[in-house]
Length: 394
Ligand SMILES: Cc1cc2nc3c(=O)[nH]c(=O)nc-3n(C[C@H](O)[C@H](O)[C@H](O)COP(=O)(O)OP(=O)(O)OC[C@H]3O[C@@H](n4cnc5c(N)ncnc54)[C@H](O)[C@@H]3O)c2cc1C
Image (cartoon, rainbow, N blue to C red; front, side, top):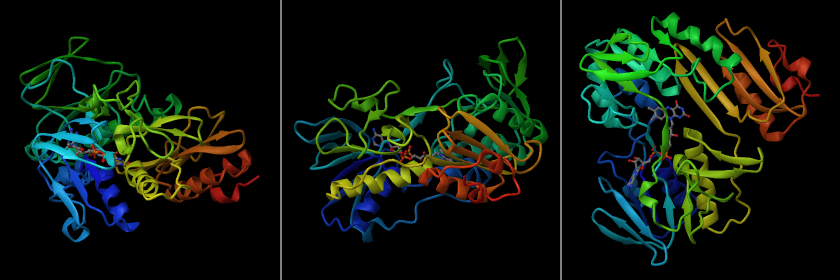
């Protein structure tokens, strides 16, 4: 058994295989030199220096997993069942692709000093002194990473300007009316949010915007999205989708025999939502490996059809989302979005399709179960924030 990629999905695949009783050899190959680690703390405690690192609490030796770190996988020859790596060929019986995603770069800024990404432990370690020295920072992109980085940078006392090309934060993830109240969070934190604005170029010590404004910048942090890290599969017979993601089936099998794909690098057909989903969130990298391990071990009932879930910690708020809302026909608010705690429910044909909870973890927990069960709900009861979600059944 060979796993390519030693992030959350790769590590969890090895763990799930052992938990399910697999006794054969497992080799876990990762490009980064560090002991495998968790990414969410990178934009939170690790960035602020309140946590040293975020290595997984997994004893690979005891687990009988051979770790090959600092070793990039370069290609795969599926007819021969061989993975080509920097240190030579590695034969496999079963291969799991778990190479995750890589951040998009701002065109023209590659190698420009002072321009940072935030994906890896090395990135976070480079950014830590930037925060500690309280540089003026320009953040490009008001998505999840941009919001979390801005939160940490404001906490550290940096002056922060966030430049977002769309008219609102999280434009790719949430509809305008839901994202609108979140724009105020930036201003409340003391950051300047400039929407509908594009970065023209980065100069030493400044960022020039498309309206000619020069914003002083001791550092620039780019958070404009990520794409599956699958360029190494080009030329193989493993089918990739429009975003470069591995096209997996509902058991996370790829188009090649005995090759699986899991986590940020793969999309899967969602029976629940009737469309293919490409999910770049932690819970997907935790749940998917259990399906992969089950299928490898012949548990034929295993189908991957999760209710997607993620959380974000930003501007002193705990933001959680479960489900998938495109395709929903009704949007309902629970509570006042100007206040500290509120939720949004998306219904489809009287059933909960998705839920966003800000400071309302109980809504999230109950909503997730209602989505999973497909319970019919009464919209007028649901809109009452004083009533528990689970008491809004039709
Ligand atoms: C800063 C940050 C904060 C986040 N916070 C949250 C959060 O609060 N909530 C949430 O739900 N999600 C969060 N996420 C998303 C979550 O961390 C990811 O969805 C998760 O890490 C995906 O795991 P993965 O194993 O699929 O991919 P990755 O974590 O990207 O791991 C893939 C690994 O494969 C390696 N690799 C890539 N190519 C090769 C190759 N050719 N050869 C060998 N190895 C290779 C990479 O170096 C990497 O170590 C955050 C992500 C980041 C970057």
